Length: 606
Image (cartoon, rainbow, N blue to C red):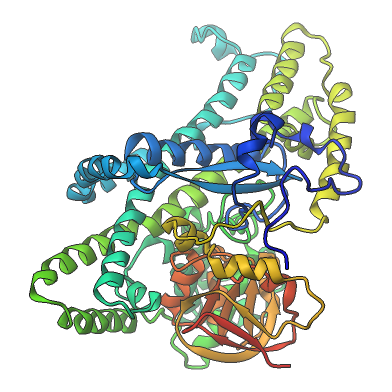
């Protein structure tokens, strides 16, 4: 019997990936000086946020949430049971471990947390409005940054407007601004996030104490059914489908070979031009949706709907077909709300009189913070991160055009501080009319890192490291990542010789369905999903929402009861089992399975 995962110090380097450590910052790596502590910790690979191998430049995203989450939990709000979440990179993948607060500090931290978080809860609506203003201001700051190849001669305006600095200086300054603005945005990200989760956890624990037999499903259903901006992009696709039918261009939408050809064809009629204008007006910001598999915004490599209009167009086509078939394509929000109110009333009736007021207060706060918990994903993970990556790609193209790199993608094989070095080399050479060392210096480094990256990308995944805890009850680990004692046991026992018959996970959304599996690991594969199939994926993001119009159920590798996959499946009334750990590696497209969203069990039927 395997009773623990390998030590991080015993995990072999994949063949061909020797020297991978040089790709990442030293503080992100396991080191001998931390060995004694790190070997005793349980680390799990963060497939919710970072399922893929990291490019060196993309390490910026990990750093943003590493420091911000920790500071707000540990140093600002004094979250009683937990400090932050520590990170390490091993073989190019991010591993995390929650840091528990010392037991002797919990009581004092709870008192401090009540005072500080209580202020936020009391003024939540006003603070949330301030938060939106701050965050959207940061979006405007990033959008205003522009990276273009430096001019052969500065324009007259630099002289006659007395600007006082060169375009080269501005390029260096703006890169610093780009990164630091993203870091500042992630401070705001965690200003409200974890105390929002804490309010939900408080309601969750109250229900567990008051109703010992209550399921996680029942608790979560008492908070669902809210109208939040995160669902707006999918709602806009449905609206565009209805508009296409109203304007009489549905047939053209269905028959088009792609967005570019369709828009050109529609330019020939008044109705077509009206619809394309509507699309373009809708696209920014509602199609600024990242397509990462799982939590959005973690990688520079994934396009947005705005970059790849064929992705949202395929969803519009599906909605046109359903409208023509007489189906309702609207989310069943009314039904979800009615069920929410019914369940809430039934449990409220069971309470002792003295507990009713506490129940009412707890559920009201949980519903209030729920809007932020969902909406922040749209504003930060989609809008701001997508814009950050877009500006980074613009910088990479400018540096390549000026000869610092052979091609634009080379920049992303450099760490943040190495990019700053490359940028200075470019600007210095431009400033004096000379030639920097750029391409010659970076060429062998980038070539080696490309080779290492490919070797890491195809290497087998090690899901966890170190000794598993006796019990996993840290609320965020369970509710967001879906890492539970059951998940860990599945990881320890997977890989045997026997045929897998069942998978266990978290019951994300109620209902029992039998169907044919469709394994999807990238948004480009969503077009292959057939009506009634069971979606099997690492995790989902809002970019995947149109798929919920076709599938009968969802199974994910990662995620807990408060993950995006679980929440959205509840909103769409689709059965879901989340956090199975090994579904993508175990199930195959074409297999028939039973998805039991009530109990969190997937049974292979053939």
